[in-house]
Image (cartoon, rainbow, N blue to C red; front, side):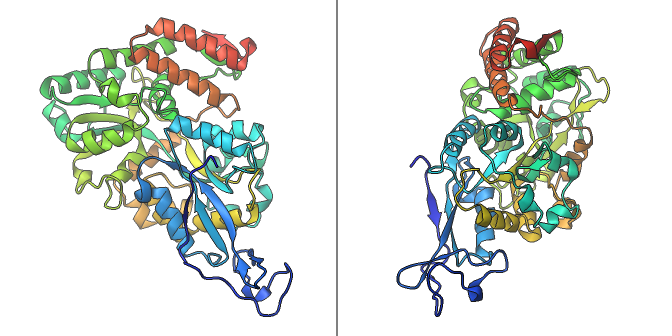
Amino acid sequence: MFRRIMRFILVSTMILSLTACGGNSLDSSSKSESGGDVSSDKNDGSKEKSVITITYREDGQGEKAPNYTWIKNAYETWDMKDQVELDLAPISASEGDYFAKVALQLQSPKTAPDLLTEDSFQLSADVEAGYLTDISDYVKDFPDFQDGKFYEKIIDGYTIDGRVYAIPYSADTRGLWYNRELLDKAGYSYPWQPNSWNDILEALAAIKETSPDVFPIWMNAGVATGEGTTMQTYEMLLYGTGEKLQDEDGKYIIESQAILDTLNMLKTIFTEGYGPDLSLVLNGQTSNTLYSEYFTKGKTAISLDGNWAVGRFNEDGMNPWPGYEDKIGFAAMPTQKGQEPGFITMSGGWGWAIPENADNKDVAFQFMKHLMSYDLYLNGICTKGNITVRKDIAEDEKYANQPFYSKASSLLDGAYFRPKEAKYAQVSTAIQTMVESVVTGTSPEDAIATYGSDVIRMVGEENVVRK
């Protein structure tokens, strides 16, 4: 079987006994509060548990991974755990490879999980391919989803043609994390807030001069980091010029001064020695490397990354960093020349989805609801370091008092979102190739020409435009 299955059964051999029922009829005495008895009868009269398989991306954290602990805690408190086994099937891969492997799984009932984590940008493509279950009828039986506890704007990101295909669990924004000591050494007082790209470049030059042994800035720049390169790096720059990926008619812009400016900014960062060594950034583990070996040890001054990065530094995070809130800062990413609105961020997020080829959709949805119940979700989202999708959680002191969350959440008001159409996922791969080619030496002009050809092949000449 393609997927690697890590099974955990938190109750060892507990099997329900039946006393009077026969055949496959349900025993009402053993029904759960969530959804009734889902186990089936065995020949010896005992019950055989139903099994649901859950897939998520494993990024090297193992049992410390926020998704693992969230799911484990949910299972331990689930009133159906005596009737259901969980097969955890994490995929250990770079972000780009994760989506490719999930797509392969979703094509067959033999390999499709019952529940998976779905990046919002991938949703349109997976729905068009017929990979995901329309859960509109399921959510009618989910009071928290119906009574306004979730942000409508975020729900909309998982809704296509009025039909719901996933329950969102995280939102995010992006900006500049920085080491206060290194910025101070370079002559910048706290809080630091650049107002243009030139302000950033001036700071990088000052850091390089005052701290020659550190990387002034770290950003995703390769194909291996997948959507992280597209969204955290390229789109954060491109949208800061005032241009988007598509024009007002929905056509992809494949050639423009804004694209050239964006690539020249990247070229400057890497040719001037402001960025990290390419051996460190052109692989799928670059984020782990950054936060475990460089940023937390004062070897990188600035990171262009998502708000979730800070979740690593908490006591139960992957890279605990006592007192980090007094050692780092978070600045909004400025627009290119400081033009209105002054700052820019991209926003996305992840949700729980049920594949069309899932075996146990009903049970999977019950577990999904349990995952998103107040206490479990509060602990889960705080550990993950993401922005909540529930209004009531946003007001909880445990969530609201986390360092930097107020600043990161405030950026949502002016956030931009990626195109909500099926071809975007393919175009994103062309962007990653374009960015990597520039940081490895290809001229921006040649990289744009290749990007244009790639996008035309993906979406058709009639769906592109040059400016």
